[in-house]
Length: 590
Image (tube, rainbow, N blue to C red):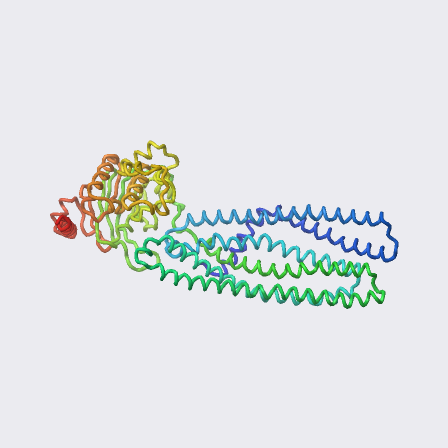
């Protein structure tokens, strides 16, 4: 994450971006707000005139009708322009929230795997919900309250000073600085506590998400009670953090009301006294009291505004930390105009360590794969096989001059072209909570039912799919939970096959199917991909034994390389793996 000072600077700039974009909408709203404030200042004048007129006996019924008509017109103007400022200020804040959420999601899509390895899903969900809502409140109701409090206060105090009594006005506004100072002090505390509250909510969201996603494991290990106890602790912490904010807010509003009531009490006492002395008329006293009551709202609004602004700034600071994250994987200036990849791969002296680690995951890897060849990769768990294919996908950036595709450094190939040209079937076989047909067609812009069914047949899963009630329109559960492991693997393979990629990578992708089904899938792949490059990572030797070339990776290094027959003749690690698996088969038969 970036430094706090940088965050603060960028926080302002991102708000300025949206404020500038919608400046005319805000301007219309502000002008409408000022019109409402100016117009409502005429109400005390009219009621004061009516009071003096009735007291002096100078008003007739027609005079009263005229004054009532003025009040009606003023009410209509206030209602009309109040709608306008609500629409343009509150409505614009909703638009900003909408665009911020879109920008936030788009930014997340660009970030590299390292970011997701370091940040939890619950935290990111909290940013996109609670924090964004607090930001919207700041640029909508918060901005409105700030402007209304300032404009209305100034206008009302000027009216009180110029139209009624300077002395009475000065006495009446004595308590106002107490609210201002108190609100500033409370605002600082609220910002700190609100940030703690949001972080507690993030942790709560993350725990809920993990428990729902891992419910099968929880039930299998009978850990429901333990998880409930742990959740109660986290929920209690979230409750406590919320209550710390609520307690401050609960003190602020009554304090503002107390000061407002004190101001009203002073005016009633001193104002009534000077009215009796005849220094001001009864109508002026009534008008002044109404003006003072108008000041109560800005006093209250100031407290609300400090609260909303403090929460909004705390959320904006958290939100900005994510927006300040820069993607590590992107098209560099040296990128070439390449539209298509044939599939010739050359890896020279590739060494790699994950960011923040000194441990070499790959060490001096060298391998050549010609277009149309199949490369098999085997090795112990954690030896670096998946890391190698992550380099080909540029999930992490390899060092320059280590990986070439069709003679071009992989760093000079446009990311979109590179990844569109690769069909990847990962180990976890992630499926979306959608229909089977949409899961298979995920990687292509458009796909007819014919192509979807053909890909499913090549992956040997078509017969399983048509047995479902809704067949290809069957909606799988979250992460494909309603399907078996073998079905998920085969649907993932179909999703890669339908792309007809120049390079296809199967990362231990048939481990959950039986050997007969495995052979049928691999046979279809060999038939359909005769002139295309295929890379197969496997633990079962049967999966890769027919590959044109096989490499054995151990502790990040290629220790053996050749065909199935030549590797057996070396009596090395590959030979040991073959012997071990054959022994396991014989034991299973017994």
